Length: 381
Ligand SMILES: Cc1cc2nc3c(=O)[nH]c(=O)nc-3n(C[C@H](O)[C@H](O)[C@H](O)COP(=O)(O)OP(=O)(O)OC[C@H]3O[C@@H](n4cnc5c(N)ncnc54)[C@H](O)[C@@H]3O)c2cc1C
Image 1 (cartoon, protein in one colour):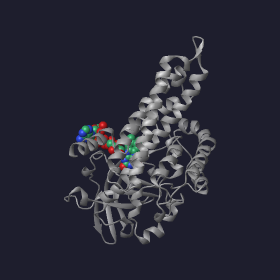
Image 2: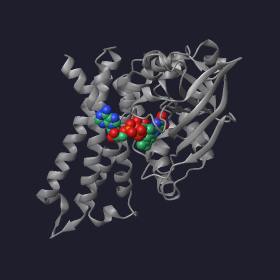
Image 3: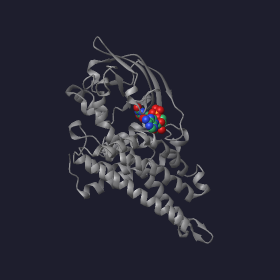
Image 4: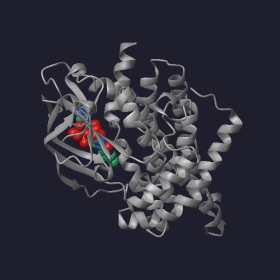
């Protein structure tokens, strides 16, 4: 793990902030309106981020990434998430389950992924298995030279443009959850991926969630990640870090919305005074500020525990994800209220922030799943 000095981290943070403001913010309205983004543009932006040395910023050095501490990663993550989800992707927060790649996979697959030339998505959820991943029905059966996958997945990010889809499937359905699943790196162009559909959704426009079926989808042995029973282990490599990144997404969105509301409250005059001088508005500003600071503190605490290798990281990541995903809903709601009618209009991004915030209570483990984990931990200690 690379130690980053406070000065270096401040410099990286400023670089990211400038890139997000000058390069990404101007692209947002058109992407939101079209609910689409040109894959060529995304590839170009990934290249620009790679030139800054920031693509795949969460990857450890042994996987070809910059090897930053998690504490440094969350500082960067708060900046990369101050744009729409479709554009945050150009920074490449990559699945840590790739740590299970063997030597051959590391040399064949990882360099392209870590440089942003190849994209990857993670397919866990199914029509009958979301929170309850033990209910996964997609079946992987051993065949000559590989595995045949059959089943269906839904709500999977960007399958239509991904070079690789990392699929979780049951290799031994009767085994306990920890040994039941395997992980398969399926090429996006595999003809066994059928019936690709795109969900219409409330927010996160330009970032597509797909459903698809796997029908006689043959994956060669060389594309199994880890052992055929390592699916749960692969998930565990990523899950807490992904939850922490989801919390950072909420923090970045809330901080950006809050800052815009401060400018508005100072400029907009009602009853002869700027909004900022009315106590009811001040109370909303104070609540937003306090909740943003609290979310940041929970995120940094979780990051420190991750860097220390503490087992408490798991629950700390759940707490951060739970709090930040609920906080961003409250903050964007208050910000919209501070903007009044203009907040509801599509001329400003405020209504978009409000729409985009809602998904965070569902993706990367719902609020209820985080509460269950936290309660079990508290009750057991
Ligand atoms: C924007 C977005 C992006 C996503 N991206 C991906 C992706 O890239 N890859 C992927 O694999 N998946 C992805 N998902 C899917 C996501 O992980 C699931 O939607 C999530 O895990 C919830 O599963 P579900 O939708 O099946 O809800 P369900 O599991 O059916 O749950 C429905 C509701 O019941 C609650 N509930 C369920 N069981 C219990 C219980 N025991 N006690 C109390 N409450 C309970 C849940 O919290 C939820 O509120 C994405 C989802 C969204 C919204």
